[in-house]
Length: 88
Image 1 (cartoon, helix red, strand yellow):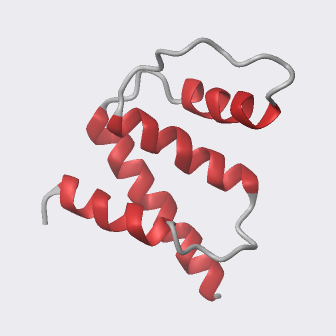
Image 2 (image 1 turned 180 degrees about the vertical axis):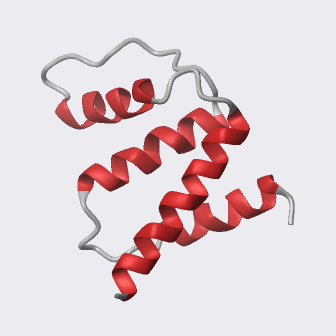
Image 3 (image 1 turned 90 degrees about the vertical axis):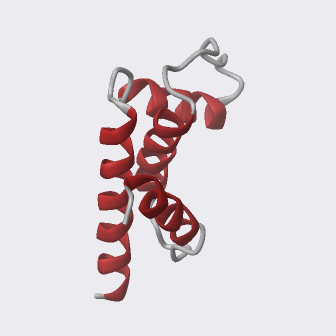
């Protein structure tokens, strides 16, 4: 299976992660997803009055410079880890 196809499948699986999934894990997934699909972060950092958007921006910034393929592979790995921990 091609990396892109596997990435898309795991992106769908990520939508149905259990509600107990930690926000920190969701932010990691968000950053990896944006890096894989958009690439380098381009908007400016949101202000203090937008904490949710600011956290998402920080998560994306944390993986800046990572290649598209590496981001997709890391995203797939993280989704698998979260699925395993949810079923354990």
